[in-house]
Length: 112
Image (cartoon, rainbow, N blue to C red):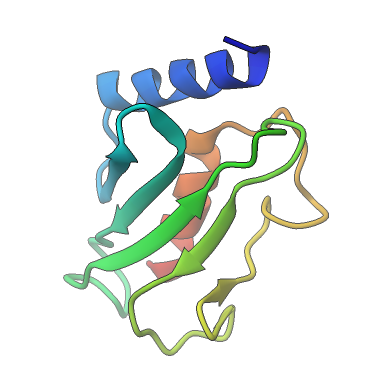
């Protein structure tokens, strides 16, 4: 197991051990941690009560490169165009110091 895969595994275990309110993760294939579905359920804001499904692709070069996230649910939002999500931490602002937990919280804040 390479270091990036080991880190990804630890980060997912951390999220499972301390779940984040409004965030659920579904791994499509238990042996392939690179592809997952993220479900965001904001509890406040204009989208409170809605559920948003996002496709998350973790590159093999993680954590050197950020996950690719695509919104699968319909939403009218200035930072989401044709499923492409523009959010701090996923573009040029990304650093390997960011953890999945932080990135997923950024996405939840975006729709809250």
